[in-house]
Length: 303
Image 1 (cartoon, rainbow, N blue to C red):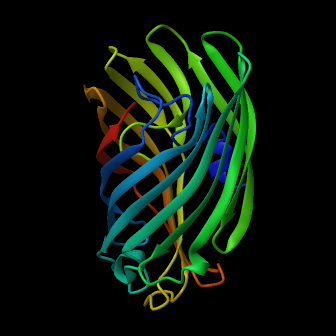
Image 2 (cartoon, rainbow, N blue to C red):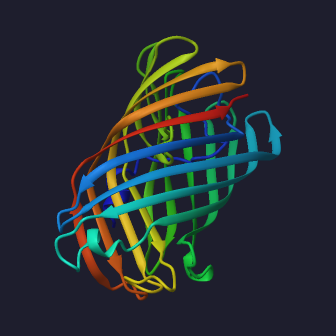
């Protein structure tokens, strides 16, 4: 099993139906957008890399009742890389093996409440992840997750689940899921689920509600981006690229208006690694790169 699913088996649906969102006062963001910048970092095999990240996502309910939601979600993100330097011709810095990576997602998140204590969560999704000019069919990934949550008290909800995700030119992954929503005090909580700011995805966060409108968060998550390369890519035509690491972040989110929320986030990515593979998933080049600081901003509608 990949480190991703061992280090952060504490995950849940990143969608408009999520029950423990690291934002208040809303539990639904039908529209959100954000930007994040990763500062330049040294690559072990020579050269440097920096990146910019932009995303926009939206969701619309297809069915809504008390404690029950079925929604359609869609999103787009752009990871734009800048490689430079490199003392040898066969290194990431000199090869500059990719630049703009596009991700388009469609999902069907579900939340279904049973009685006073049980919640069911599920989400199926399909996504295109590839460089400009990559083959559409060879850039698709899909899967889903499902989990139950039991409300032990007004302060603690906990439950298990399971997920399945396909990987481009790699084995599909089956991984455990744990739902956590633990109110430690009136102001402190420990949650899995979506994170603040432009750090998309799920993770584990300790939240401090400074006021009814302002929340401070400290969290971490394992991130992995695996994508198809352009069929005319000079380093590996139709190959596969991968970038993964562990971002540790702090975030501050605040309600700027009745239905408008802003978040600021900053932190450092640790355990970073780049991989370049051929079209069959065979490794061509692999290298670690130094911890990279990042800063970001997010805006979302809340209801």
